[in-house]
Length: 327
Image (cartoon, rainbow, N blue to C red):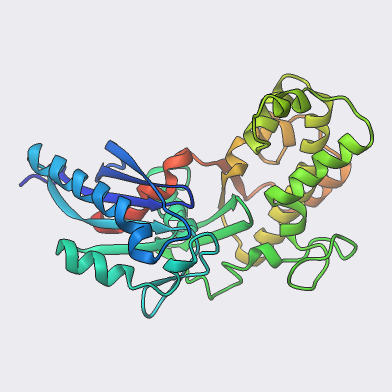
């Protein structure tokens, strides 16, 4: 059968829902379905809706005459490399140390790949997105915590090497907030979703007016996307928060560049909603207003580092999970 008729089944397990899709070797999602993730249940009960969705997609592939080359799974946590079992999945604890690889391989008799979500994301961006052609690609994501994954010459660097997987605890400010790890000023205390919410609350406590408050009173959830939308409309508080984000993100970019020496840095997760023009990250164009501190911090890496937003958006881990099945 032609390789163009080959697809992989991508599975992205999330805390609220699991997305399952047929994805071709060009990174195109041919069709998808979603299943509710059942939290607070034993592992098999948690996974059962996802397993039914996988079987639905396998049936669809057969009906369309497609050959399924395997199943690629993204999990929202870490992965134990020797056993390939999920670890540190705080919102779905029943999946910790669960033999997911063995279950899928035995049940479907297909090749299986399992990756931590941030590792799946960097694989997707390297093959199909903003990181194509990069020799040293660093991917940063902003979700509940700051996560990172690194590819060198096409090979995924283990999360146990070079601080990858622990970048949320890299210190940026010795006088910053106390982190859960015991240190002060870790990047996670300055740029996580919780940190950004605290920036917003400080502005409210100062009595500053913002259209963000009305949107939240209308039952919209605070998010980087919501923040970006109001910043583009000129909301003072949103713009102020972006200046603070830009300050710390600029410092983080320089720190990561020293550690990893990437030639391309891709920003994903919540960061993909942050307009580079608003935070004025060098060397992105067009360059907007930026504090003198942020400019001076970035100057050593400005010439050699390309900073980009994710090209694959919310599908990045879903697509990346199947990438090793094709290449």
